[in-house]
Image (tube, rainbow over all chains, first blue to last red; front, side):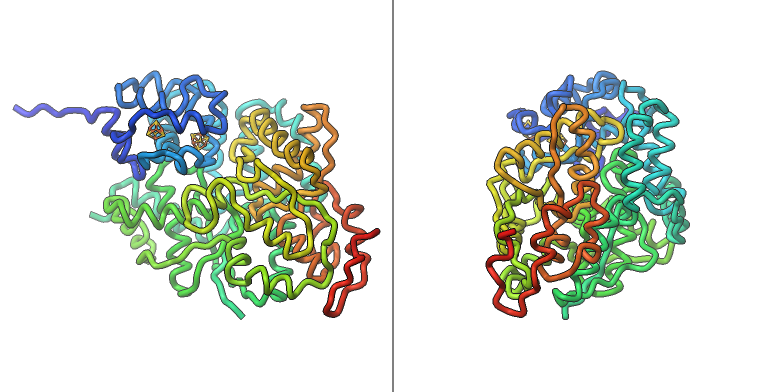
Length: 184
Length: 306
Ligand code: SF4
Ligand code: SF4
């Protein structure tokens, strides 16, 4: 009789590119102490790593903490064990999105709009991606951004139409290849 | 003349337009030729890593595969692109499973990547290939007396590239000094501006931008010289009025992307330096320099007196 074990949360994270060393974390806390936005995290980076190792998947992925990572790489530059906490945070974000967790943050919607913009145009179409994001979250928040958007517009820094490039077809083909597990 | 493959990145077509224009304007006088990749696509940037890492790396690899065909170093002005292109290179060396998945995906569209491309930041190219001495020798309008805070931001120096110091870099200050300007002490020069989350966590990003502006102003800067990253430049320039609104502050610090101030020092005019694209207009601050006579060789030291 065969029993199939579900990979643990820790294994799942460790299998994502750049996250393999998560087991070597010594819990020194340098990452949390360095983190640019730690004040906003309910569970700062060191604790997130401890929670992943303790298998606390729901607690980690239902929390907004990881979504405050601004990719400043201070943690990664300073970690004495070469763990790459920034990559781990983004890996956790990807698992949360894939498994439809709903942490209390609007960054999930922003990332999805961002990815869709790439799929549709091959390049980021800044105006369209921001518009989609605000329509999906809080159109009134967009009003606050209007003066800024207008100043970018008048300085010719906010084209209103997308520039879809041919390469987008290749990107989508490549995504398809990855999703379906390659040519084999 | 030095030749490079050039990858501007998506933001350069929108919010980064003035930085891009200034880069194009100084390329020739600096004897560099930037050959833009054909039909390039997004590098994936950090948000895509938060969606799907393998796909993100495949997107990045398409850019690298295109660059490899040219046989040249790949130069980008966007720090976010720089980080991710660099990371894809490194990760595919170490992670064979990832390398295989990306290889399969590239093959499915007739592309191939052998991992040979050297990814470089344009600030690093200006600093190392052009060199500050050669740059100084080309100066026609010394920026004497202009006090500047030089802002590197995070991803130009991190995570790990082996060029400048990861926490206290000084390329930009050396470049500014070569132009005759006076770099002020700026402890936050490699701290993050938060722009990757400025759309969804606006208040948090404004807090970070406010700290940077305050630190620059407190140290006596009349302007910020920023790295070429369009995200950094936009955060400091276009979001400055939002910071003033939130913090009841009165910052009015022009943010000169480094190619813009180089352009002025090389004798180009306001429009050629794309300074008309800056939201905080540097016209008044720079008029003594812009109006000064272009020195043929030995620069007139009184340029800044006005
Ligand atoms: S700095 Fe590195 S080793 Fe220390 S707690 Fe953070 S991830 Fe672990
Ligand atoms: S990269 Fe993310 S987790 Fe690391 S210090 Fe910066 S904000 Fe914090």
